[in-house]
Every structure is written in C-alpha cells, then in structure tokens.
Image (cartoon, rainbow, N blue to C red):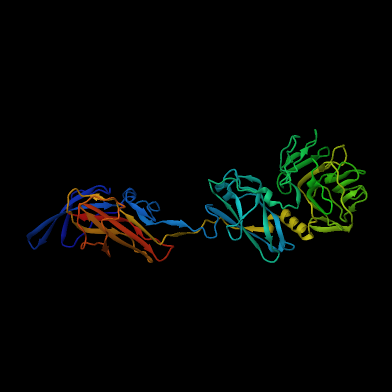
Length: 524
C-alpha cells in the first residue's frame, strides 16, 4: 500500500512502529529544535487506514472499495435507459429495408448465425438467456429458437417483427448473458393466428405420434409413416430438415385448423434428387390421400416437365401448373396462394403463374401429409424444410420477403459488435470510518491527512467527530465537524476518547470518480 511516512518542516520524526491495519496505531516522538538547544518535546499516536478491510469496516454509502482494492471510489452503476436489464450483452441487428418487398406486419424473421464466438463464450448452454427486443432496446419481441449450439454459438431463431418497413431499415437487438434467466421464448407468439401450421422439420423421429412439432398454437403435430419415417439431416436449407428416400412420409391428423375453405397459403423448401414417374408427383404437402385432395402443393412431372402444381379440390392433372422447369439437386422455395378468386404459385419469391378459381375448398377428415402419403405412390426422394400453411392468402410481398430472408439471411440483415450496458458513477457518496477507541478520555485530534490524486471534475472533503461517550459508526450523534481543505488539516478538530472520520466524494462529470488512497489521523 501507500507509504505512511510524512515530513513536517523543522520536525525530526522518529517512527517507532507503524501498522497498515485500521484497528492498530503506532507511536512516535518528535523534538522541536531551535539552534543548538532543545526547546521542547511532544508525542503523538498514528491511526492509519489503507487497506480494503480498513475501509470496509466503516459505513459505506454509494462508494466502492472493490474497483481498486485499498482505494475508495464512487460506485459505478448500470444505466438501464434503453437497455433490457439485467442482461449484460447485446448485439444490434439491422434489417436491410431493400430486401423487404413492402412494409409488413407481424412478420417472422429468420435470424441465422452459423457461428458466433460471443454467444459461445457468454450465453447459457440452454439458450434460455437469449432474447430479442425492438430497436428501443427494451420492448421484448416474441421469438422461437429452432437451434442453438453453445460450442460454436450457432443460432437459428424466428423473431416476430410487429412492423417490418420497406422504406427504412428496421433495428432489433439480440440480448444474451444472464446466468439467472429462465426460458425467454414465446414460440406460439411468433406465428400469428393466420398460421394453421408451421413445421421446422428439425426432429429426429421414430414413428411416434406427435414427434414432428407444429410451432403454432394449433399443435398440429405430425408422425412419421409406419416403417417409413424420414431421417433428420443437417443438410437442410435453413437448419436440420427431413430426408425422404422415396418411401417415407409424415402424417398430421385432421383438425379444424387444417380445413381452410375460403383462402389458403402453402409453402416450403424442397430439394429433389429425382422426380416421380408417370402420374406420380412429388408433394410438399397435401390434405388427403387420393384424388381429389382438399389441397396440394407439389412438383408434378406427369407432363414430362417437372413444374409446380397447386391443386384445390382437384385431381392432379387439373390444377394450376407453373411456367418454370424444376431441376434436380437444387433447392427451391415453392409457395401457392388462393384468395377466393385468384390462385397464384411462386418459385423462389417470384410469381410463376396464376389463374382464376372461385368457390370454396372442401373439407373432410383425411389427414395432412408432408412429403408423400400412405399408399406407396407420390413419395418424394429428396429433402423438405420449413413447411407452412396459412388460412389466408399471403401477399406477393410477404412471399418475396420470406424468400429473401430465408434464402440468404446474412444479406437480409447485418449484425453488430457485442455491446455492454452504459454505466456512470453516482454523483455523491460517503465513507465513514469505523469508530476508534483511543483508550483514554479527552484525546485531541492533532492532524487529519488523506491522499488522493487530482482529477478534474471530482472532489473529496473530509469531516471528523469525537466524544468521550461511545457511539456507533452510523449514529447521528455526535455532530460532524468539517475538516477543511486541503490535506493536511491540523486545527479546529474536536477532542474525545472515541474518534471517527468521514470522506465525502463528489463529481461534476459522471464519467469520472475521485479516488481516496489513504487516511491518516494523529492524536494525542
């Protein structure tokens, strides 16, 4: 710690012993000399405070002894303005408005980070402390984590953006690092009430009921086919997906939410290694297991050219066909919509064909199938990822924006650097020492000294009090006497057996703090 040696003009100091512990004292004697003759002698005792334990024995208010152990500073506090406290880190995500076709409401944005060293080192392994807020930094957004791998920080999450602008960039924040956090997800809240089913197809399945999870509140969970369960693969377009070998399928029991009658949207990512032959098609999803199906979105090769087909209460050879030839071993985002009068099919976010279609969609109790059906035909040889049904006709802008986001997440947005919450020093704080018992009544304060560096915009003032009557360190009496400024102070100090000093730390610049290094008291 700091030296307690002090020079006094015309005094010759002889230090007998000196301790750095606040509860002990040292004795020294000094002789005043005038010419060759000894004029007088006097003696005094030293009480010094230098260590963290010394300072901690006192009464601390809005100060800290841990920033630099053995020194006293003002407390540094987190500023939660515009910050989701008590989370420690965040990253700003900025969505490029040019990738948003038109402004959209309640749009689920895919946040996909292939690796992230900050998440790997600072997030909980469970991902429970991962959350998202709007651009104000405090309004929590609904999100669902499809995958989080703590070893490398890989994250696949879906975040509902209440208002996604095509005119200006949209900001949101990814927060992490809160060891006490419970699960922050609200998966159901990501998918608005118009979604009938959302299947990420990330599961490793064995043919058990409900194993393929629907993320919506409808809980339209699916089951791998009897002896024909697709296999989870890490080769999906977005994340894990299901690999079909030409015999596999997934069935979803019929529910009312799977029976839209006046409007519908169907979509999914598909990668086909080969195409069905003859009248066999390659369905992304279909409601029913024979013609006419309630609805079906598929790749149909029955015309010798693989194309998208959207069928609504129609046999496979009748529905709306796309204009673009589908190639094998290629990922495609395929979507079909119907608004009650016009049905449209989309390929990779662009309209591929449309036609008039009126009436309603029939309903029955047949299951929904993903990637095939029971019966041995119309079974895909390829991979399915991210299959969805809505009970409304999604707009062309919605589908284009989905494609832009899911096909190339890292060009849809940018991710900023890890940031910590801002912090400031409190404007005022005090430290009152422990009360020191000198052992005898009427002891006099000879000198009060303190060491602190000169820092612009900061200040330290000291007070003292003494009494022959015992008092506790936080008692309101006896009253305090201002010791003056600067150090050292040797006049106007009170007397008494019990001694205590108090330092007042203050600032005019919240980015700075005064630093109190040491306090020394001489008494006799």
